[in-house]
Structure formats: structure tokens, C-alpha cells
Amino acid sequence: MRTKRNWVTTVLTAAAILACIVLSVCGNVNAKDNYGQTVLMDAAWKKNFELVTRLVNDGADVNAKDELGETVLDYAFVRPDQPEIVQYLKAQGAK
Image: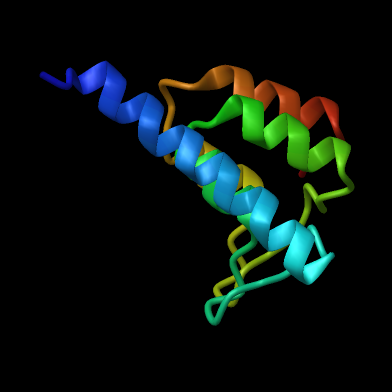
């Protein structure tokens, strides 16, 4: 039987794999979807610290904005139970 923890781990791993595929196909770590959202925004919103750090190390723009003007930090703040993502993004120059 699959536990909630295993399910969450599977989803986060799938997100990391998808991000790697997007990066290898697009070659652009700052590519945006139809709403102006980047993979970094999605990783911050989904509380995936490992993926956030990988994307930033690969050159993701920590100050990117979506169509509504929301920043990566805004996406991270939606999930207050993950303060290390906010702290990390600020240390990388996010405003």
C-alpha cells in the first residue's frame, strides 16, 4: 500500500524529472508557460527545495514575474511551512 509520504515523494520526483526534461528540450531554464510562470515558480509553490536550488544553480531568474506580476518569492510565500525556500531565494537576491 502506498503511503502519503511515498505519494508526495513520487510527485516531487516526477516534478524534478519534468523540469530536467523541459530544460533539456527547451534549453531555457527561464522558459515561461501561457501564464508567464516558470519552472522555478512551480518548484517554489510545490515546496521542492531540491529542485529550487538546482534551478537557481542552473541560472533560473529568482526575480522572474508572471503575467500578474507575481514573483518567485510570492509563490514561495504561499507555502509558509517551507521557510528555507524563502530564505534561500532571498540569499540569492530575490526581491
